[in-house]
Amino acid sequence: MSATWKYQARLLKQMIDSNNETQAHLYMERLLLFPVDIQDRIIEEISHLPHCSSDAIANILGHYSVQELK
Image (tube, rainbow, N blue to C red; front, top):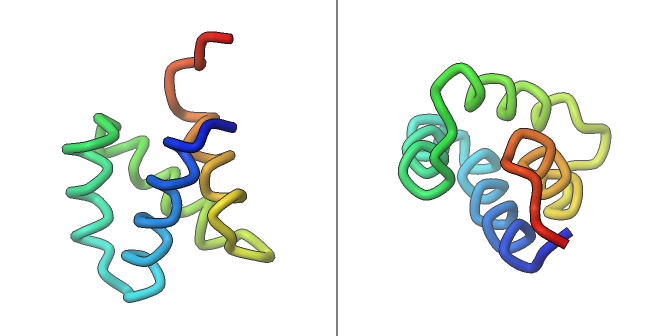
């Protein structure tokens, strides 16, 4: 998992922890370029994590993103 995903995950986690779902949607739409239906899936998956960490969120973001080049 890249440092970029971890950083974006940390910011997204802060927004979700603050119950600022609107800001989280805008962040994903502008910076991460996820369509609204994917945003909803991501937020839903994050809300069901047994332990919400930046690494767990980064894994979810990576799952829905374009595959990273290795």
